[in-house]
Image (cartoon, rainbow, N blue to C red; front, side):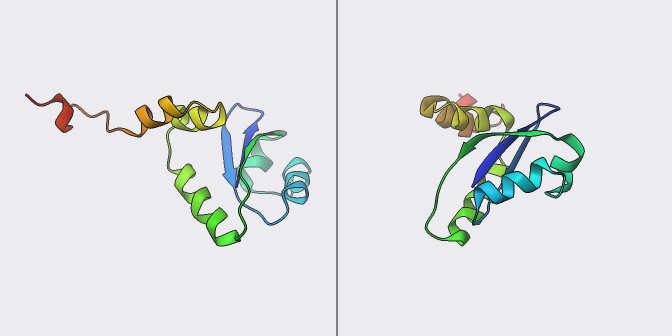
Length: 97
């Protein structure tokens, strides 16, 4: 599972069996539509898994995260990662008296 920073400062999250080959595809415009449109890209984070289905599951998990939560992961800030995982809505139980 990997995260790329695109030229427009957006993040792209993907998974692959061969990270170097996939990165070359993104850089050459043969990758995903997002990286083709907003390339070039920079690899800023990756995790290795022994099974591609585990990597794909993690990719889908991280894709659903906010930008701040992704940045906490990228920057190895576990305390922030936990904080950004909490519900921030005013209706959340921690805000009720």
